[in-house]
Image (cartoon, rainbow over all chains, first blue to last red; front, side, top):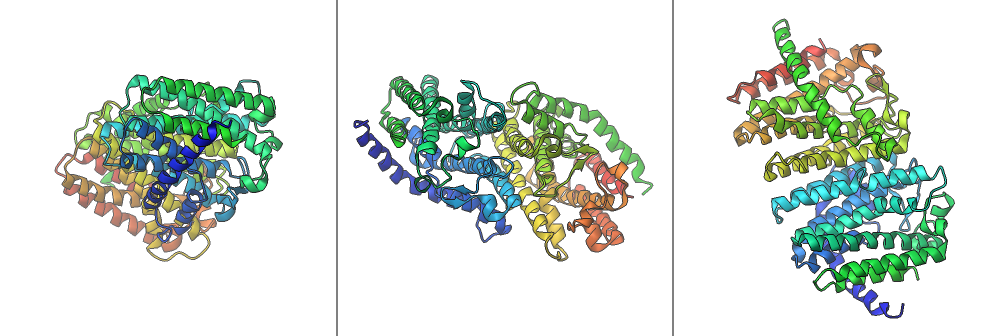
Length: 302
Length: 302
């Protein structure tokens, strides 16, 4: 793991440089909290600006830049992915879903604004994500449509996030089979991560063979993301995590750590990391930035 | 009112001819209920096929045909509007929102499938609506983007349905001012009705002046729709309505009938009808089909 340290800091450097532009774009895209209905707009902003790492926007930007898209062309779509991701967090936290009171150290949206407003804020964030892409006149029309389609398929069912959340809720009531947990996470978090990477490449008009290799990279990156997230849930303190640690395991959520144990989960993370790096070898571009993201994820739970 | 009878039957004739194609398109567009996650897919289909009148799809088709768009080009977008409308019904019915157990004579989605599945089914219907438009390769790319943008703005906030629902919920806790109820309904039901009409015209590449007149028509049609819906809520029996009559008034929902009284609400309906018809005069096309829709709405509460 000692080798990864300089690469982790390469990602930190990239993230620090790119994040402010993402924050500004999110701020410009969201309705003003002084505009009516103020409660919904405040709830949307509360959740979007509750301290997210902007992983999906950063991945999209890193991918786009790998394939030589100009930074400015990537920003609206990057913001759209964060809006859609935030909607999913708000709805997942609801009492009838995962019933979470705390996220990133803050009260969740429904705790702060009430359940009805939280549902509406999530709904509006989803609409706004699609609107943001459709109205981004800096991108060619054909590409915008591809982006809308990618985002919609990664968000919905049977190929996206909603399907993953449905399987996850269903899995709480019974014992999960080996392999199932991976399928759940491929849909629940993987689909949107893969789509973010693909959309960066689509904006850059990457070649089909590059897009295939990138999809393989991002698919393993998504697994790595989820496994290390599960491991953090087991090992981190409440303070470092900003949410209730061990909650997933207690509520019999299907996690890698609870199903395979910490050591086997770490092995699975190493394997996903290796596969992600192998996929990058197929892309004949300077892929340092993408590799730095994989290194960052691998290192965060060790 | 005697004059309107043949026109009402003109609408019934048009609706009977067009509706089966809408039903087929919805069936083709929705994920199979035998495909996993089956609970979410069954919930989506349950609500979409719970006996809706398909008012928005029919309006979109009638408008598109008025401006000479081929029937087949209108179907996917018509279905997308019904998917989005159905998502809004599912979420509006939730316990934390309007808390409705019965719709169109059937248990509502969360009563039948549980709250978590209902939220997910609504979320997935919204994604699917945008996906359906983005992937409709029979339409030019520029038009598809316009349709996504129109639908998103009519769905979200501050210009759409979510804003209307937020104002409506807020209005329950205080006395509503004159004029406010109209603003609520312009957003809550009007925006999607206006967008449906506009999208039909956009697919037909109507001229800007025609689009303006059509927007004025549809805006008044939306008011007429909501006022007559409010009046039906007051006057109809449970059997005819398929939901609990008088519920809106009891829960201190802001309705025309409760705020102005039945007679004044009927006057306001007549006025909206007249304005809708006047707007049609500005469109130099055979507008009989659009007028028949207005006639149908005016007649349904008398």
